[in-house]
Length: 425
Image 1: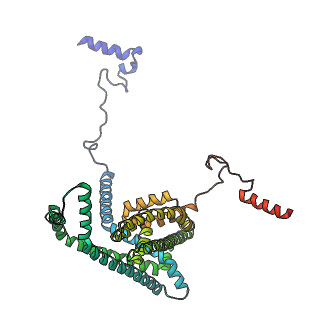
Image 2: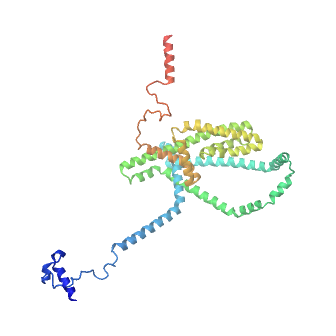
Image 3: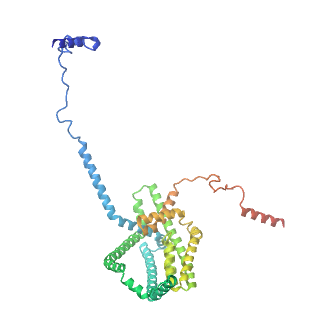
């Protein structure tokens, strides 16, 4: 072991190897030669394994946030039906707001004015469905009585065309003994309770919407005051302006739709009277309302019932009704609707079509009804905050033709020529 000690001594005293000469002499800093270095200070046992003080609180907060999110999601899904009913009631209240405000401005109480407006709407709706129900009942009885005659004509046409030998008795027996008819009767019998529950749910939903729309219309000023009381003055002006735009757009939408329904009903009434189709007034009202308040495809859905009843009179009459429905739809889309909706609901047809699809996907048939006034209100409100600039005079902007602002139009030049001719005379 002596050589090892000698090597360690040489290493500690060699300046080239980084040794300290004073430490070899046993100075106060170096201590004895070859003594081990002092042990490093270590943390107390268990200090590195201790949980941070903020971690339990963070875990409790995270669990509380997750629980609140789950509770809010559950509550939202439970109340989604009520929220949709309130939204529909709000738009209905906006639609009758102009009539209620006009009657209230003449000294009538808003509650009484709202009740009278609702009563008028209820009487009109009940009268329409009464006429429609009586018409359908009479036509169904007539169609059931004439069904054997229609079936005989169809069977004779099949026998003549395809050289077959069918009889009405055989067809009736095969239909009555078919398995799909038995299954249909069984499913209908078992689904009576489901239909009853759906009818009761629909009545309750209609009552809820009516009550909320009545309160929104009767207490409109109070509702606006309550909403503005929690907002600063600048925000109050924006909210009131948005409310005014919503009332104008919703009322304008219903006004334009009602006017187009009147024109459509009159046009179809004239056609049905010329053809001699029964129940022409009720059918005209049906076509007018369904074609206008079910957007995009309402005209074709409304024309199906007159076509069916016209077919019972003469099959060629159904073809005439179909042709008239198609032609009138084009006239309405390209001539009538742009003129009537240019000042009330001025939105692009593609935007209207997309809004109807989106509303249908979100809320069904009700969404299709309120989609267009909702989008028109949003477009009008956002239009006030979008800065517009003058469009550049470029042929690409005007469809390949440069806009001519300095030269007069053709009509103006023609008027100038006529005036010059009169002056020369």
